[in-house]
Image 1: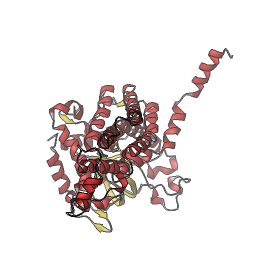
Image 2: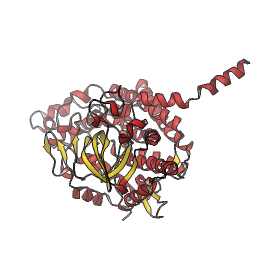
Image 3: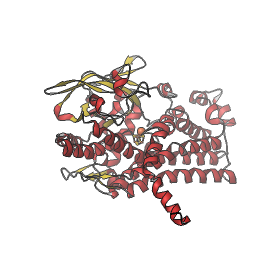
Image 4: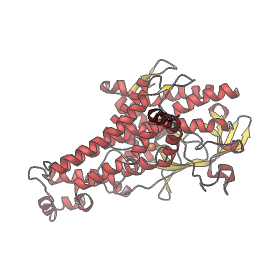
Amino acid sequence: MALMTGDEYVESIRRLKMKIYMFGETVDNPVDNPILRPSLNSVKATYDLAQLPEHADLMTAKSHLTGKKINRFCHIHHSTDDLVKKVKMQRLCGQRTASCFQRCVGLDSFNSVFSTTYECDRKHGTKYHENFLEFLKEAQEKDWTVDGAMTDPKGDRGLSPGRQADPDLYLRVVERRKDGIVVRGAKAHQTGICNSHQVLVMPTIAMGPEDRDYAVSFAVPLDAENLFMVIGRQSCDTRKLEGSDLDVGNREFGGVEALVIFDNVFVPNERIFLNGETDFSGMLVERFAGYHRQSYGGCKVGVGDVLIGAAALAAEYNGAHKASHIKDKLIEMTHLNETLYSSGIACSCEGSETASGNYLIDLLLANVCKQNVTRFPYEITRLAEDIAGGLMVTAPSEKDLRHPRIGPYLDKYLRGVASTPTEDRLKIMRLIENLTLGAAAVGYRTESMHGAGSPQAQRIVIARLGNMERKKALAKNIARIK
Ligand code: SF4
Ligand code: FE
């Protein structure tokens, strides 16, 4: 069953007995929960799209391990073409869901753990790559969604993992047994965790020899004993409980994040991919972050396409679309969005082969891509709000629109051009609200800033890979300075 249908995916998640907390209560059935369901639907879209012949080239690939057709979200990149297709697939998924579809953290962790375990084994004689290949084979065969989990809570940012007042603020090994390890700690802001089959944990920073217990990577199922998650709030989240399609802006899709707590979780030996080799922690972090910074040049661009389209419709629906400043704002939004895409594609085209045989993006360009993502969606959002006008935050509820007495007044006074139903105008206002201020703003705005690393994290890599010495030499050469 190397390719699951969307419905099969939903049922496979339903079978997991996850421990999820939300609003101070346990959620017994996340699959049918109205607050969580839209986020499940976004992941489901990655399965549904893979079933369509017209998207087979982007959404599926051939496994290099088994030769079988698999979902591209489970694929190991073996060429720059694979890297480019990944970005195009993400743009497509962003266009179809207008939200974070969550599955890329798994893909990015697969590819970074694949190459790092290979190099670690060569140096240390460990067996992590073998372990990982077995895990990957199962993930491909069962078409798993895997949550790549990197971000530790980090406590005092001025202190290394081992020097924290509370040693659990970075996830660590607390016991080494013959048959495996016991880990304790947490991973924060975990995208899509309650919609995943497995979690693949990685360290969050480069480490020194004293942080041996923190240099750990492994995979466990989401219903592992002593593992639980606490769902993060989103702006307007409880609106989903009101039963109004119109008021939520995006009825079908959304994203979800959670704090995941590992309260003494056992990991069997065969699922360990790093255990104390601190010299490979930095490599794993850099590669995962690099792949995920590339990802944003696809997913955020797809969501941006929807937002730009919504802004254009808002202008058409109120008759402002012919004004030159509106046209110019839409051009600016498009320019910014395509600039993000350009760097996503560029870092993919400039990718190269690692020692393990898979392909890594150009790290400098991937970091430039994500640095742009920390800025441009904010400007695109600002322009969308400018075009939308105040109605996107003052529009009354659907219940008022349907009210027998006041509804006709709203229909009359909130209409723009006579030929467009007021309801359609309100739908677009709500979609723009959803993307810029509402539930999806987590994925489009703040995640653009902090997801895959905050802006400063990219600037550190840009400083390191920017090769200032060569630039100075070029200038000296032209200026004829010896
Ligand atoms: Fe994928 Fe983008 Fe969500 Fe990351 S933020 S998981 S790249 S959709
Ligand atoms: Fe993300």
